[in-house]
Length: 147
Length: 147
DNA sequence: CGTTGCGTTGACGCCGACGTCAACCCCTAG
DNA sequence: CTAGGGGTTGACGTCGGCGTCAACGCAACG
Image (cartoon, rainbow over all chains, first blue to last red; front, top):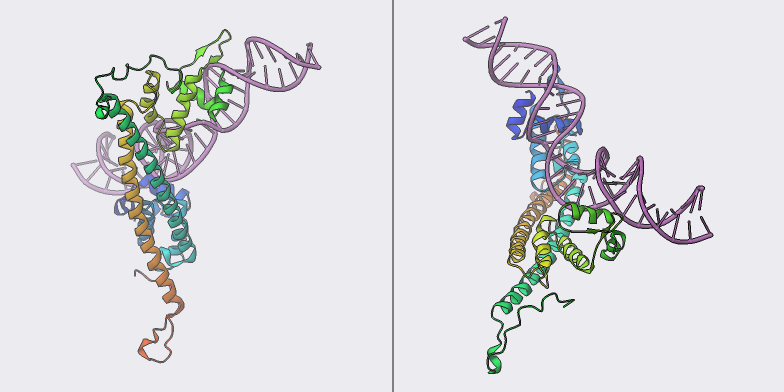
């Protein structure tokens, strides 16, 4: 199998495969014309990489899985190094989710405050005091030093 | 106030300020020697930018806030465009969090499965059948075609 | 007078994971 | 013979937000 076929079967591009080879993730034999030659195991290997990358793993993080497969193990995550990468990624994901939630709260609060301000600017007269119509906020004091 | 002082007071670098000016986020007057000159309002403006960037806003997304401040409004989020950016960012954050959670579950499941496999490889004899000691998985069948 | 220490512009570096282009080689079908 | 559809290497482009020179100007201090 040559690079074009492998790329198509793996749902990727030849550029990507060449890049992976350059990174040492893919090992290609060469035929008489210098063409890269691949086998079925390379396809499984690529599927492993793709699955991981879809889950947000960096290319380098797939290396233990690749090496595990190449060592003859039935799955890329049959080796301790791969499990370690899983665990690190889980911790990373948890930390990221936690931070995003914090930020979400922060931004949500800011939006809420700003919306209240905006509403106050539109309907400024507090009619709870039964007072007669006062001047409804004199249109911004024109170049106010600080709030 | 010149660029060094502003950078220090804003907790950033001169490079950043020049970059912001190039992006049109900061407008600097020049003195007799061609030096940039800033005022206090630029400091507030930079604080607005920094707050937003700390919350994951891209530089371009801070533009409405900056323009809002420059238009004389008391806060960067006093304008509808800014509120719109808030809302978009909230939606973005929610989507991102949801996806990360999905991925987290996926990775967690993979880790769990792989750990079970690993445990099975270490203590392979299912002793529930009361059978005598069988050969505990014959060391991988040496170059298996496919699983 | 030289040496700091501020400022200026311009331009390249970085990071990851490729996309894209150029210039070339190889085989096959018409 | 030519065109077309593989393959090859090498190199530059992308994106954001700056970092990091380089080479210069201007001012004050000792």
